[in-house]
Amino acid sequence: MKNFRKIIFDVIDSTQIYAKRLIKEKKISLKDKIVIVAKKQISGYGRFRRKWFSPEGGLWFSIVFSPKISLQKINQKLIPAITLSICDTAYYLLKINLYIKWPNDIIYKLNSKYKKLGGCIIETQIFKDFYFVIIGIGININNPIPKKIRNIAISFKDIIKKDIDTENLLDNFLIQFDKKIKMNSEILYKNYKKKSIVLGKKVLIKQHDKEIYGTVINIEKDNSILLKMNNRYKKILSGDLILLT
Picture 1 (cartoon, rainbow, N blue to C red):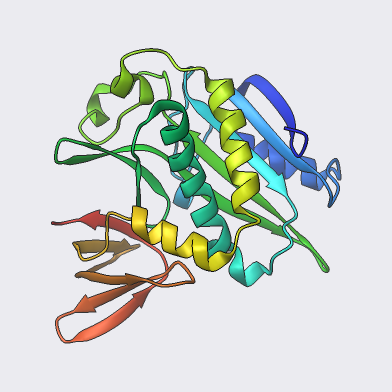
Picture 2 (cartoon, helix red, strand yellow):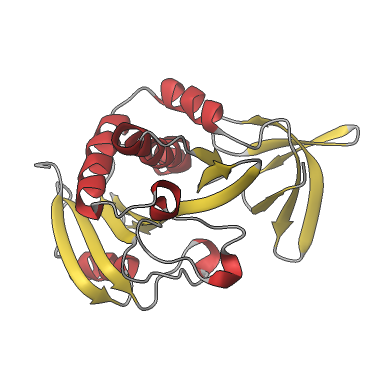
């Protein structure tokens, strides 16, 4: 794990917020790759600043560094690298097959039902000649899933019926991630598509006060999706995707 420096907390407001403090206080250099890990978060959040339930037992962490890729290619490179690293780690350590729901949800298929096991968020801090990326990742490991979301969420412990070493899983993820951010983008893109559960599916995309219905024809290289809507096509850059079929 020589490429990453860990900072570990028992409890913190949010690993994302702490990462931003490091940048603001100039406690990270352009050469650093820092991983902030919390056993529990009080104010963890995901996409669109939604509260992320982060009790003890889960794996809640942020990776902060300055990438050697253009800002415009962040989603194209990092979302496949992150999500595939989680999938590959789960299979390597636990022989569990995981899938990806666009854009960044990690999914386990239980019988014919898809359940969310984790997800990620990518934020940036931009300066004149460089930028930092802050990747927030949350994975349900040994933490209990609240009763109200058990129909849509699951943990590794629910799947294999025993506790998992979260530190070992994190270390293996970081090894995978370090490899994947150095991989050819075309290979990452193809592997990301193979793991997708949305291709060819009828979906609902929610964007603020707008709802868009259609069939997913393709995941584009910039990590947008191409939606077929009756006799026309629409490129979707962001939003909440709900599977209808």
